[in-house]
Every structure is written in C-alpha cells, then in structure tokens.
Image (cartoon, rainbow, N blue to C red; front, side, top):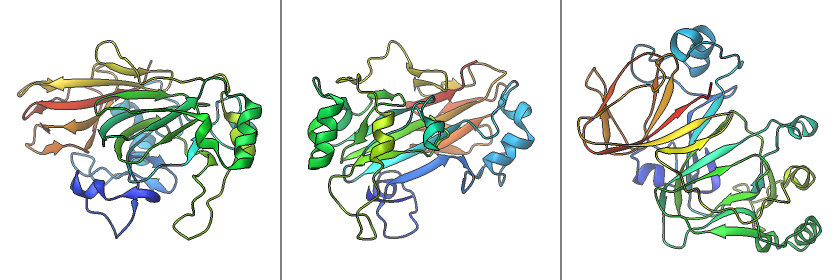
Length: 300
C-alpha cells in the first residue's frame, strides 16, 4: 500500500519486490478484504484466496464454530519513514453509529531507530475540552503521550485508544478485520496528491477514550504478548531444530517469522516477514537456525 509516510524498508530489510518507486507504507499479508485478498503462495492450497479457503474449507482448515463471514483477522507489516497520522479506531458500541466497524489491534516492534516514538493515549490532565481546542489550533501532538520503544517490545491498542506510529519503525500489526480509521491530526501536511488529507474530527471525538492516560509498552509474562476476545498472540523463541505446531490441534494458527528461518516438510524455507497459515492438525515446522516467531490464534 502506498502511503505518504512510507519508505522502502520492505525492500531493503525484508527483500520484498516493491511495485514502483513508492513510498510504500504497508504490506497486507493476511487479508480477507473485498478488494485486498491474500493468495496462498505455497502448499496444497496454492493459488486460492484466503476468502476462498475461509468460505469453502472453513471447518477442514480452520476449525469448527467459526461463524464470521470473512476471516476475522487482518495482519500487516508497517514501514514508517515518517510519522503516521494521529488517529483512533471506533469501539464496538460506537462504530455502527458512525458507519464503520470496530478495530482492536496490537503492534510488535521489529525495528526502531534511535529516537523513534510511538504516540499512544493522552497526556495526564488533558480533557476533551483541551483536546478540542488543540484541534482548532493545529497542535494535537502536544496532547498525546509518547514512548520510545525498543525492538522486541509490543503494545496492545484497544479500540478507542488515540495512537500514531512515529518515524523510523518496522512493525508487525495484528488486528481485527476492519479498515475503519479516523484521523484527527496529520501533522499539517499534504498527501501524495499534494492536497491536505481528509480528517475525521467528529468521528474521532466520538471514538476517543478520554480516560486513557499515558499507557506504557506491554510487560508480558511468559510468551503471551496479547490476549483479547479477538486474537491471542504469542512470541516464541525456537532453537535450531525445534519444531512448532498448532497449540490447539482443532484450530489453525498464523505464524509470522520475525527473525531466523523455518522449514516445512517439503523443504521450503521461510524467513523474516513471511506469514504461514498452519491449518488445524499437527503439521510441524522446523527451525533451521535460532528463530523468533509470532503465533496468532483465535480465542475459544
């Protein structure tokens, strides 16, 4: 996806072949959106779209009692050469009133250049009135809490949390299957077309949690990075020769390689930036060398 804030790290760091000069900000790797479909590249189901598999082979590949009309997750890689807009996703109780859909997400920081910042939540003492005044003055950045994360850290972003990714990061994002984003401030810049980007002030004010003050990076206990009604994400460190399979043999999981290399039974290998669908069952993947992965599952 071309983005005004994007760069070329998907090419230089992950070896992706980009479709043009860019800037390219997002890669939607696991996507069942009407206009953005993931296509299986290897394995028995190569050539099929994710939606095809979800519609025609749901119980066989994914598990039972899964009733969503579309695959319920959207998984991306984000490359922020510049700051993203300050934005919010609507909570479930608000989204239908605004004509959108709710979105809760989590971020895993794969790379963060020195001084890179995340903007999450409000600074202490910021009220809705002060925030609205800052919108009028074009100074919303002074209202938002900032953090300087390190590679390997993660943070949970519930719907309603004001947020923005700062320049200099590569992030794996795991979220609900929604594309509803309300921009409240865009650093007073123009888009790739030379025009000011649309803002969604009314929708943002209706969605922001004005009690969400100064959250910190997550401090997970053990391997679990995030667990909510929509997804569960674990970070696993695999030694050379170790194998990985679905924690629940009756459910699928998505493997995201963040470093190192995995090998499947056919001998195909997968490295940083690759996403793999492990269908239900005991299909194993082997670590070729010391390898770090995210394993994402759906809660029962």
